[in-house]
Image (tube, rainbow, N blue to C red):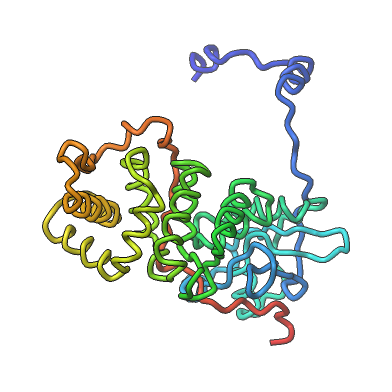
Length: 331
């Protein structure tokens, strides 16, 4: 033990500590550890239950907490005290509800003061990943937090008469596959997402079946491989004339007979096959047909960025589409 202590570097003095802080200033959070009354807490829910960032309750998570509840093991909630002195849950909505059910009127909390609502939403996305928020609630939180990419995605979709809404239901002109839009934007930028949505709306006029994650990702794959070889509007008209069912049947046939990797690739490859079929009928030489579908995406240069992006969601933690009671005392 003596030898180990002798090998430790000497501790710095106070002057050195100030020097380190001057080089690397740290903004410490302004919060207090308090015991708060659960009946006083508010939740800034996502639409349609509000205009905020918090997901509705997960019934699975509530059931899990009921089974495993141990008052001594309850971690502090993360709370924002707004200028009007109201308290808003950033992290701990499920604990709030189960504590009330179990007869606990108070819970420990880290109560932040002076947070902007946008910062609340940002903290929500950072703190809530363990419980598997849905892509939609995470996207909505980014909107509230002022995320420029999320706002750009909304704007691009609106150009083509489309709404991005993960809770609107299965409707025409509504994209529920928000994670695929984010994925396309992360990998191909605004230009790629514009191209994909322009192509699909031109072909199918916002038909709901054409806006699924497989279709969005498949068209993105087609864009990467063949965008510089085709006329987008011409190919969109061809696909639209064939109809969505023909597109689906062709992609399903490819899935049964060829290994092309992810299922979404079959939708991109089926467009390429349909284009080549049409061009052969028109007498286009073989050397001018679209080339074989390449598995590697690294060859597509500036049109593709290998950006890290995860849209994984734990299925069992997806929320029910009913919010928690806002005012526990009234229930």
